[in-house]
View (cartoon, rainbow, N blue to C red):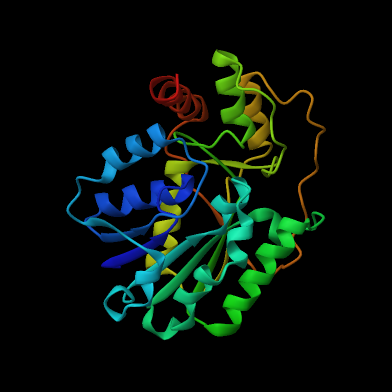
Amino acid sequence: MDKVVIIGVFDFVNFHVCKALLDKGIEVKGVQIETEENGDLLVEKRLEIGRNANFSVISIGELTDEHNQKGTMVLSVYDLYMQYQEDFLLSEDIKKPFMNFNNWEKIVILAPSQLVTNENITEAGVIMLNFMKGIKSLANNIQFLYLPTIYGPWQPDTFMFQHSILNEWNGEGTFRGLREEITDALFVEDAVASIIEIVEKNSPGRYLLQSGKNNQWEQCAAFLGIGDHISNQSTKELVDNEINKLSVKSIIPLPDALTKQIEHTHRVYI
């Protein structure tokens, strides 16, 4: 990869992907989409990456320009889902960049792992599946990467981990509802390293990222002192046995990774 376009560049997983790519010296064009992100938090994120000469922000409309269509395009359906913004996938704006799909070397879609298990599909799931099916019908140069719960700095408060951290300090308020996968969890830096490796080295296809450990989500919840009221769920069964299952290498121990998230939250949010 020498150039990557990220749609929703300031969203959680996408933001970490962007930072990791910039650290590798790769040019990143970021598309900012409407979010409920607090203005001060967005400023903080811009400060982290905005001074990098390889980073620029473009509009989604500019993706129809030929000079912006070379390289790899990344869209995180996962981030949209976890921020209750899956309706964005119904808009005509998001469909336009995919229409000239032959101009992209590769298209990468990040999606929640629930979409490849036997978990009951919600209305939000139908929207995501229909969008992904439509994109798949247009092009063959697509990688679908399915993610369990991702945690770490900048995790939105729609995840139980971040909500509990904020609630402990400032009484964050009512939790919107449990959307995340609660049978597995990956630290965002480890997940992003694997995502970039897959994009760089693997062929188009479907990939499920896993920790390779039992009850990883529950271990994270126990470290944070939460989760006792969440009913235990058995490991979900895959509905697609042909999907490529990949274990993510864990670099940072779980306690250190969660402590990093806690300290970051205290610095930025409190």
